[in-house]
Image 1 (cartoon, rainbow, N blue to C red):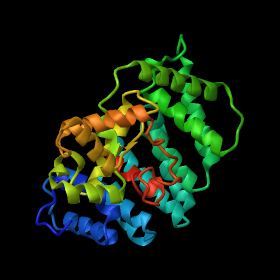
Image 2: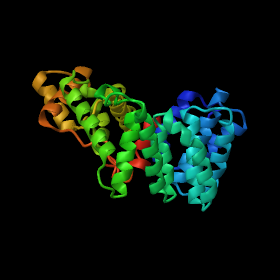
Image 3: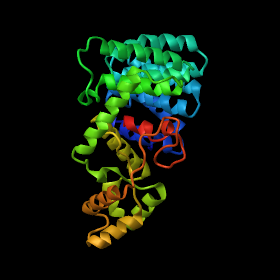
Length: 332
């Protein structure tokens, strides 16, 4: 994004989606920090958000000195806040401290965040991720286990699929993932995580199918060919491949958060879209053609697996790890 006099919340959202794919992500991180210093944020409440994004970019590019400076300032900006964004910023700060060899400080910061496991669904993911960076996956398992036991302690009945979008299920999922990484044997709570996920899957497969058009994905070359043939497709598919992928990633996260499992991107091709338009006599760039072609892909079983693990190849085929590609677009 070119330098702007004022950065709005919408600008920050766009940068969250696209910064890592630009030619100079570190330059964008520096510009974000400069915008904060110069008072060029349209909403001063976005200060912590802008600095957190700058820190994430610098960390991803292994510029840990800059990442730590930005993260220090982000934590200061969130000094009076206790919400999910503030918790994420502090966990990111701890993660960078781990990477710079300051393990004791990192553990102290994460220990202070540990109570959030009992109240914030996102905390299970960002705390366990930070501990794993510090080589303390064992401690992540311990904390998650104790949080799960606390959540279950006063229950009089087994959790149901209707509760699976809540705090307990996020704890169970992250604990299950961590225990797999540690090669620990299945226990009762791992079985509970599996049961709830299976119940969610059965519920999702019997519910009304979400609009498949929102999951229609075109690989980079296919996307370029689409816009070259039908420039009017921009509104439906996105202005560029970054926006295209970001839209699909956010839709998949939305579906997952609503209790949908087993739903992934639908991999399409320009020739397939053109063929569908020809068979139906419709405009290839029209929304009805997009919807019809997506439904056709559902029938063919053209769905890609989603989500990948953080360190696995991203679902979009970029060649980058998921954590460095489409996962950050989720926060947009």
